[in-house]
Image (cartoon, rainbow, N blue to C red; front, top):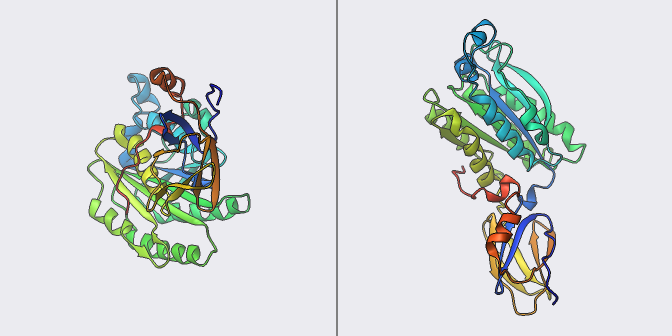
Length: 320
């Protein structure tokens, strides 16, 4: 074998060879090919302080918008998982509490250019059902364009006012998924701050459905500044591969089997002279040439330091 550093093949973001021990980092979960992501941000009146003052008040002092940097980070991060890098983004719980203000289809690559000053009309309540209806209508259209899986990330800082309706609708969605009329969908619910009703969130998210398991998972962040990172952890833990995967050498021999979950970083040994390995997951195969042994780990780490954030995120979190 000549000295080389092989090109990294998707879905991998980084591959190292340490004396026959391979350490391969996944850029994203290969089973979420065709994933369509939407992001719904709470626009109820209790969020007003987090977005900061507007109009005359904004001119009196520097505006501290705690939501905007978090929204930008989440948009950029989630776009790395989305099939076209574009997310449906909306404020929810606006107006009378049941309305949505759709911000549009926003591209992750332009995340730092978007402004998130808050909704035009802060809501008088926190009604969640319209969010689910909106996302289901959206994913039905996207299926015709190639979407194979759905993910809706929903942020709230309040108690949900229509929990019973939400649970009833989720049960109906699960039936449609089970019947093949909808693709697999996950709802990620993140609560922020002291006004969140954790018991209520548990009740919504713990529902199990025949043939589907859980549709929901949730976590609570103490502060707005923790929200984006928490979303990343939850999404990563939710989107890990339930069915696991298998690693083969270049002669088709099985090197390692991941029974339950495929972690973000795969570690396994290859036989001497092996020049490539293949990851098989969910009926798809991804073959990656093996680079020469690492001799300058630090240099190579710097070379790969700019991988997508998904590669670095640990696969942990509380999944229901």
